[in-house]
Amino acid sequence: MRSRKGEGTTAELWLPAAEKHGPAVDQSKRENGDVRVARVPLVVLAVDDDGLVLTNTLAMLDDLGHTGIAASSGKDALEILRHQNPVDVVITDYAMPHMTGLQLADAIKKEWPELPVIIATGFAEMQSEVQPVVPRLAKPFTEAELVQELEYIVPREETVEAAEAGASSI
Image (tube, rainbow, N blue to C red; front, side, top):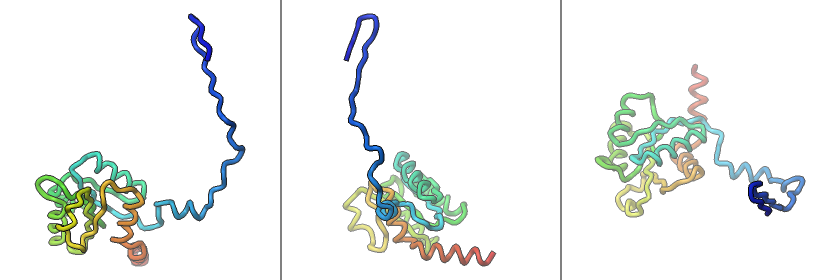
């Protein structure tokens, strides 16, 4: 480094030269590690009272090719379900004021018994309250974990078959 009063400072960084070509990437490993999967896009209602978590969930859904609809409370979620186009899956936070995710799941099952609901929570104590049939997603969750849970609750084969049946009837 050189510095001269009135002229400024010159700094030099010496870095090792990079290889001309980077290491080859095994395509099979890359494909298996990619969380984007070929499937029919879903309409997912995401419910969370934390705006940052809700925004992140919607961004993940968008990255995966799904349509995310935001609701900041259980009450808002029920209004959306009653007045919007059909929703394929609901992902709801567990700990919300006025209506917990479990209470929302119960309300959804009464009006839309076939609509799958995923409870997202960071609370371990929820384990004893939730029936074993309610799928759970541990917070914070990754995009890969979201894909895995969506695959579990709405298998790709069923979604593709339903889309093909709908396409053939048009």
